[in-house]
Length: 382
Image (tube, rainbow, N blue to C red; front, side, top):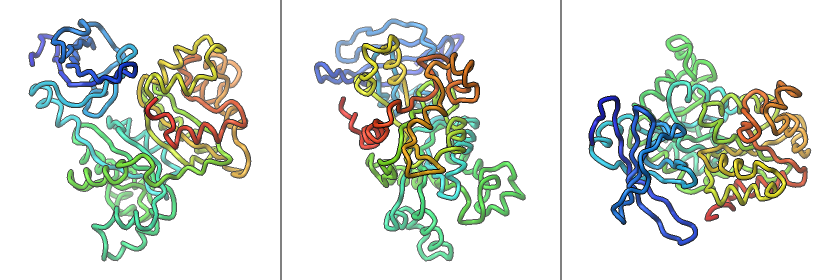
């Protein structure tokens, strides 16, 4: 692939599934770094599908194997590199590793996510899991027989963990560097700004786990993300739904939003996921014909990865938290929120009525319904 005088052109093989005809189309997708322009070539029909056009909504960091991007109304799944130039230049920049926030650091999950994004790593997959003892033993099988094995198994099976697949340049080594030494005491001396120094307690309760090799990263990622209901932690009662919208995830605000939420509420389930345009329209159907921004809201929800959260009242976990959390989020229009509720989530992290940082359940009777819809993946195939 050529390198332009003022930038590089990268190529990827991507697919788009047409829900109307049930046909999957393959395209060569080209991205030009000098002006953030894109073009597409129809592989089957051997003709240009989209002429080169500026598309600043897509950045090079979003283009890696397995990612989904939205081009106008089409969601494209990137399946492979499109040429050897792209493979050679990007493969090392898009390394993956497995990360896990342990139960002792769940309360600091927002700050840890902020650390991840601030240091240039992207979260490809993420899920909160409640592991059984058997699952914990499977995950830490390599440590069986070691003195700390039993305490480690008890720790990660006695509370929720947050598993992540991270992607970025030298992701495995960079994540382990961010973690710091295994011992929290050593970390506080040798790497005081590391995650374990800030949020760990001892050698076992040391906040986070990081894969120690590329092969183990592959095995551990498969362990957590081989099926969508692995270690399901959602309780599906006395709860409400929060969605950290795609624009907030893309801008790196998700960690700060989560940190604010965890100060006043408990998060009992969490997952990074994405919607097709049809699934987004189905989820937001209650607003169709009522909200003039329905089409824009649908487009935003289908524009990229978002984070779903099951929210429970921290002070009274047996109560219905819908109204309390809705007040915490603030008015739907972020401009109004900044005037009336300047400390609300939407005032602080939102942009306007469509890109308002978070969705929350509006009606008290719908909290458990929305949580169930999301965390049991009822939207898949829509």
